[in-house]
Image (tube, rainbow, N blue to C red):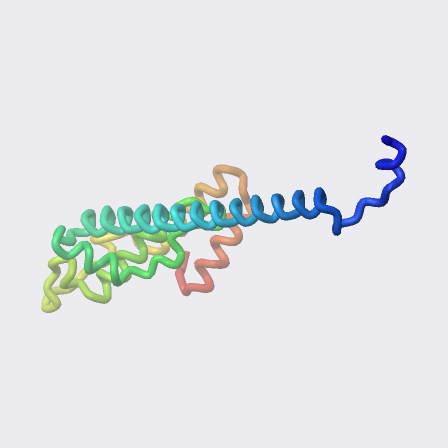
Length: 158
């Protein structure tokens, strides 16, 4: 009887293989749904993390608690995460500073007076210098060069 099974070709039209294939497809679909749910959860967590960091910087820059939500809606958080997936707090701070430079009233600064953005937040040049120094300290010359090029591209004088 064993000889009969060994000599028979495996064909997908047989019930056993079709059931196994169906079970695998079902499990693959379940895993895809789980992955999608986890990705959606992670995206929500990233958004909350960015909003919290925006709120922290806005508060440090003198924005009243009532206006922090308005600032967070205006901040361009597209570059909030570095290439390695970590939150780039300097980029978030710069983005908040850019909004407050454009609309100083959000920070309680009157438009009639002179707004000194350097007093309110870290300048882009200082932020880039700090990141470049950190990269050099870690021995990551490629990252330092990349940051210098990025700063030049954005018109930041180092």
